[in-house]
View (tube, rainbow, N blue to C red):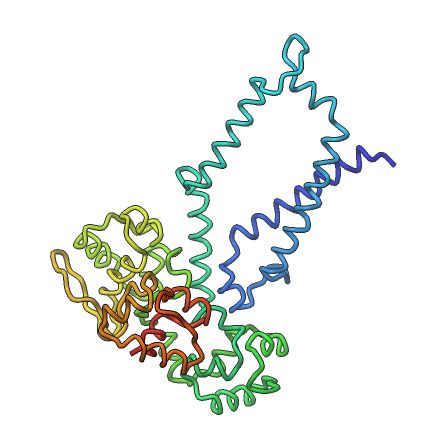
Length: 356
């Protein structure tokens, strides 16, 4: 048994497997989409591919460690100059070090050409979201059937009846969507679609209204993807950006546009929202600056504290805190809306409506 050969071959094989699962993870949909639609490739879920990547990555690192051990003499030889003197910072070593440092810095500041790699991956993931759909709210598959029905305005009794007629096994209303999906070997999305009223499903297939509050992951979508998802005219959206003096292009993500213009992603979203055909919104045309859409749920709430929201929109702070407490939400005046939203898995719009 030749340990040197075994180490080299293990390094090679683990590298090839690592290359494969790295490519898969590069193109796999975002977690919320993959979990919701039960996305799989060759029978493996995103979690399975991620676990494989981690384990094989550790194996590769161990193999590389032993590879360095068994090939220490050649490596030392690479670090010697022409006089056979050991010198770490040789010309070749410096070039390798500089290339590595450039990649590290590029990944931190996300500058070209490194951002191209990330943006290409993001565009693939966003297209997958259009194809597979996304949950009505973050981590919806982990909600109990009762909680999910409440959050999505579905009558629980009707939903259970529809599931039973479809042959879906449900133990009780406290069972989570993901557990029901696994029990019946379907996706959480399928459970949701079976529960929805027929007329709602038809409306969903025909058109998808742009929500007042951006869904999770919206900041990573390009303007083009958002327009395709909600059936918006991209020229009108771009004209809206021009009217608001926002520098943008259709292939840029909302996050990139926000960073480039030094404003929040929710402000970018609000401009796009003005072109949405959803009730209460208005279309933006060049040179116009119309009122904010749907004042019932103002934009930009995520960056505000409870105290800020109450003072800005004339809401009694103590009454708002009591209303939140009545819904099981414990918060302080200085807490940000985004923090409360994430903690209790509720949208900022819903928080605002409870506070009112």
